[in-house]
Length: 87
Image (tube, rainbow, N blue to C red; front, side, top):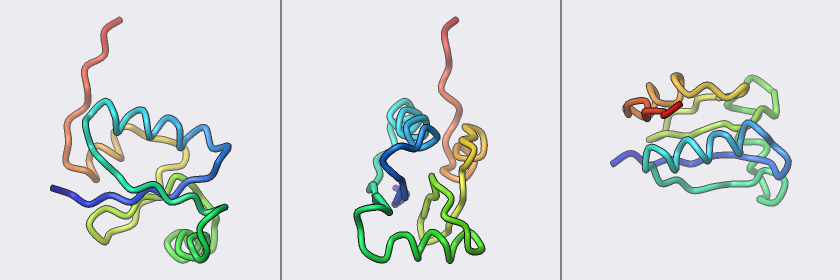
């Protein structure tokens, strides 16, 4: 099973979309709010060439940025399929 950390902020719409997606595909994660956890913003900035860009994910030790939120990019990084949508 993959180990997922998701770096977020309180008002981030892309973060909310990513959380919904992770729930849809049944992937658990540890949420780290960079506004509340000491040193978390530095981790995000190091992973994103100096930018405080969220959501940023650490998946089994590899960092990916997913802002703007991209379902396919995150699915590929997680190794999961796309959930089916009913219209």
